Image 1 (spheres, chains in turn cyan, blue):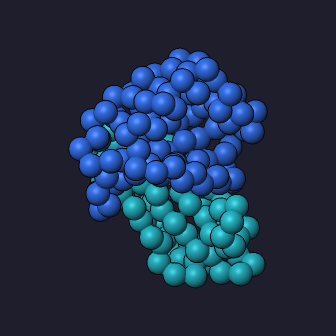
Image 2: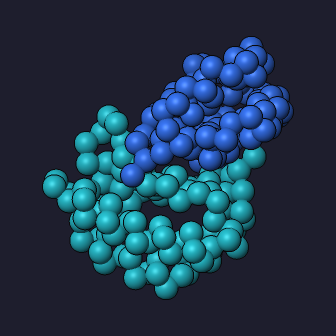
Image 3: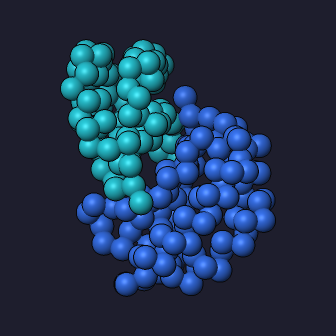
Length: 95
Length: 95
């Protein structure tokens, strides 16, 4: 298992747009990636304008398939338009 | 959905003990908590002696049921004996 924590900082007032764009992406992930076991957008309770995506993948191949998917690449512009900077991605090894 | 990221710092050389104690706990969580959707121990790739648990719960009731479970309370001493400090727990609101 591989864990990912993706931290997303959104521009002021753009949270709803981020959530909508992410919902489309997450639906595609769930429909197309049997090796993905979690892909949950969460909102920080303490840091304003901050979201964290909790992700779990069966293995490196599943993680690569996610990154290579057309719908993942297609989500980039809509997400990038409302983010306040580049996502911070932390990779973790499942035990 | 509620997300939790629990950061655990383990004492030098105690990683295997932590992993064993956690495996027992995780098996009990998976067997007894229908409202738990992820409970994955992960090891940091960058920070030594650091683990993060990625957790997802259906709602606040599911999170409370987890914290109140006998096997969760029973895991405390074994985990505490090998940790280098108190766990840092971050709660997040699923979107």
